[in-house]
Length: 371
Image 1 (cartoon, rainbow, N blue to C red):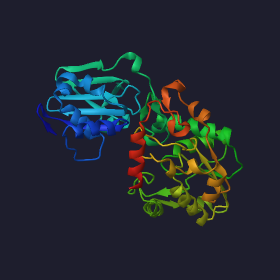
Image 2 (image 1 turned 135 degrees about the vertical axis):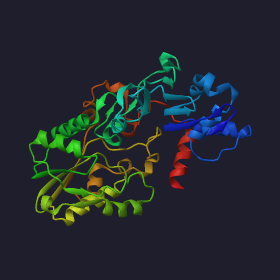
Image 3 (image 1 turned 60 degrees about the vertical axis):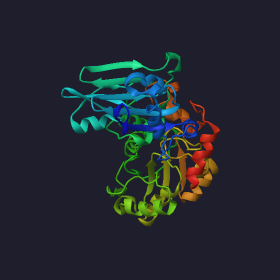
Image 4 (image 1 turned 30 degrees about the vertical axis):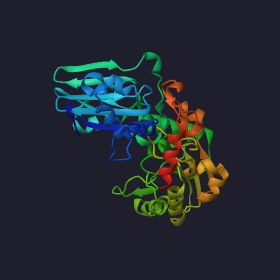
């Protein structure tokens, strides 16, 4: 982007909860928006002389509410920013004589960079030819960690460290706790790849039931719960996975998955196992039921699209056509972290939102989901 101080690129991981109000204020003063992205609000703030990046980035950041890990890139400077709650991860790494920023440490491994540390909540880190400069752009009393637990449960790659946690080890602990809370007599434990793999290993070790491959994944098809059309999600599931008959035929199968959001893709997956001859299907989910929308950057913002918001666990089991269904409890999930429970956001499970959601933002996101 070009603006009166030069060129700048902005990357944003998260979602602003006050984007609609800020956008309306800009439009009332003659600003023209070209997208529906809340990131464009940040660009318009930068264009105001008061908030120009080179001198007053702190003033700009203090106008933002919600979740944001930000990267600003100019011809001579890179700036990494994390919101005061640290909803979304952001890590600093060193590569030869330079530095890199990434959401996940596995990205650093891929390019040969060395992980240095996480950017802290409420921190802005400036990287240029003179090295590193760090500042906290908000008062200390505003910094209240609320790391997204779903980053650990689902989004992050198992070979990453997020919020100081090994993702793989965290998910193994989820599986072990799930075996403790929801045991079942069965012949084999399988996972829904790739998200359920680590938890399935943990479940198998804790239960003593052998772990095997039950699905073969087509790696050329992406994630499905983020796709908006139900029919399209169903068709892609058929392309994405194939059940391994030699593992499941005639057996009582425990299927470990990391989540059930809308339920349609899960139903298709378990149908594949039934076609392959599974005698019984027992589903175990390594997180609690998603009953509430997320307004901090995860793409389920409408309560009506969450199957657990509208059905009991027994009703979901019947919908999925499986012999049993259990979710990990909130307490069980939170017991697997190495950091204080109060440092995490689990609003999509509990409705305990760390940052208040403006009513107009709720209405806007619901409208976007329907359109």
